[in-house]
Amino acid sequence: KAGVTQTPRYLIKTRGQQVTLSCSPISGHRSVSWYQQTPGQGLQFLFEYFSETQRNKGNFPGRFSGRQFSNSRSEMNVSTLELGDSALYLCASSPGLAGSHLYEQYFGPGTRLTVT
Amino acid sequence: AQSVSQHNHHVILSEAASLELGCNYSYGGTVNLFWYVQYPGQHLQLLLKYFSGDPLVKGIKGFEAEFIKSKFSFNLRKPSVQWSDTAEYFCAVNQAGTALIFGKGTTLSVSS
Image (cartoon, rainbow over all chains, first blue to last red; front, side):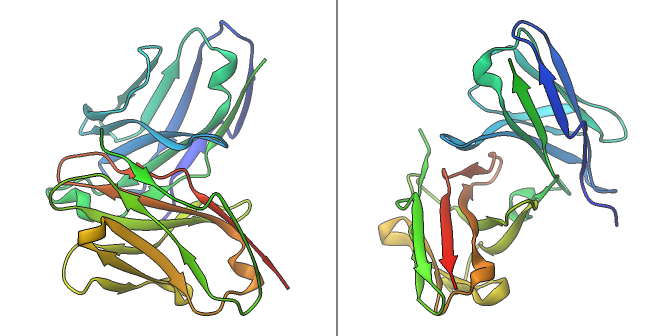
């Protein structure tokens, strides 16, 4: 099985711009979660999507949004970028079925976003 | 708010030394506990997980962790570390219906 893929792998944007990141989960997985990883804060949960619906949401401002498509692929969007948004954005997938909290999440390689 | 604390930010050991990384959580009720590892340049991957039963769980590469409910802890251990264990280690916790929340991570550096 192919793993979780994320595109692009690296991105440089200017403050005030917006960005869209993409994640393709493992085939058959219906849950996709997004995390922001920074040296100071570690991994912070952004949101989780299951069957095109947001199921859980972290404590991030409304500039961070996401969506999931019928094929389970997910995108996250950050509008009005700030310097502090520079981070590694990780996507993780899991089966997402009942009792899904018992399943491990499989992580992608991440997208390294640099905001200048 | 629910939180996960990892006490050690950076641990430096020599090969063959024993390892114990601390993890405490602030959740009430039934929890599911995980340790993930991120080797340099690689994806996060699962080391081990605890859902129920024997509080001592064994994972890959000789790692184990002990769940102590009374202490809200899930410490990771390895009797003898190798240079290849150099990585960042993350403790994570969730409950039914909630997101997986991670600690800030512990960087382990093992010198040969």
